[in-house]
Amino acid sequence: MRSDYYFARMVIMSNREAITSSDLPINLKLLASKEVLNNESLKAGIEDIEKSSILTALEKSGWVQARAARMLGITSRQIGYKIKKYGIGLLTS
Image 1: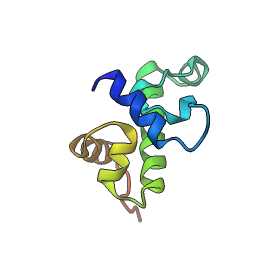
Image 2: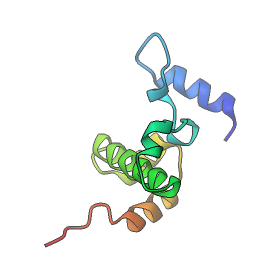
Image 3: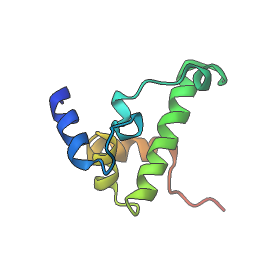
Image 4: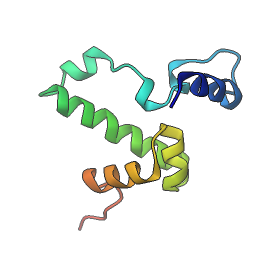
């Protein structure tokens, strides 16, 4: 998507006077280098951040995948794939 779309959306959706990094969709956020370096590898760090972001979005959206996907700036199909990939929401006994 185009950046002007994201900025317009952030201005409309934000309930604060200033837009912060928490208002950005996950695909526009920069990774904190300390978070990534504390993990075994860059890939593991990115996966941890991605999984955490998906879980947070699902909780905020009442576990409605389409709404969580919009919050993250990804498609419903992408979030479905990532939920399956990370085993999110599966009950383990």
